[in-house]
Length: 278
Figure 1 (cartoon, one colour):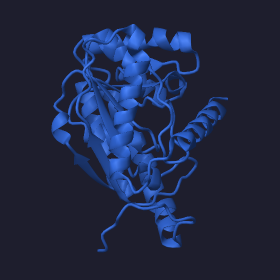
Figure 2 (figure 1 turned 180 degrees about the horizontal axis):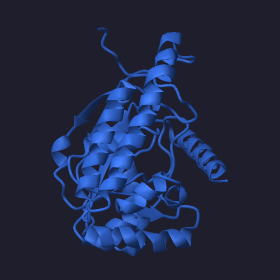
Figure 3 (figure 1 turned 90 degrees about the vertical axis):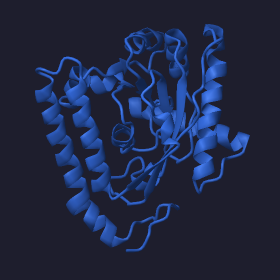
Figure 4 (figure 1 turned 180 degrees about the vertical axis):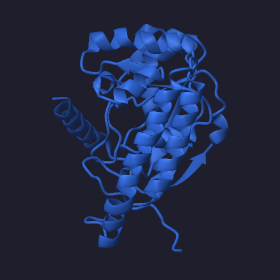
């Protein structure tokens, strides 16, 4: 079998990949999500600490990654020791969430957009499995809702969040929100920066066709928050963003844009996110 390498996604995809995606991968992706989601809801009837539900989510993540045809590699995974921290990563695709659940070998809670909690089935699972809603459309409400994540951290459970607030439409990183820095400083825990590479090419925004490619999760060194105060949230956010950018472009075929070009990409991504919210 020919070894796949990561590169630009073909447009259009070969007809064989499109046929396999529509006839096999997409239906199995949907059915497995329904199956494991139903198991999780049933488990929630007695699973008070969320361990069983999280184990089901991990199995779901590994299963759908295999269904997508991706081969997942973790780099510097020794940093994934389960320490209480805020784990952050860039956001490129719908497949990011199953990759994260399948790759992190410990129990954690994910901080998700509040509107997802209003959806039938998905919202039921998120709420009953103890995930944390955050309002990303209202800055004042966002800070208030992050209090739930701080309580989770103080209870000794790691949390994970996509700091961009939405998927990238370009494959490049968008501007980070300061929620992770706020949570880490308030809870007195480190930030663990991570970069996902390949999920954009696997299943980009506005696509339903899988293009099997290698997917990599690169884990950076912990960013300690000792000595940071609330007035330094932006500084800590910038530090985490720079580290994830470094990890991403070191392992991607993409070249990091120049500063002015990056600002244009950030504006375009922000506008796309606003359009999605409307």
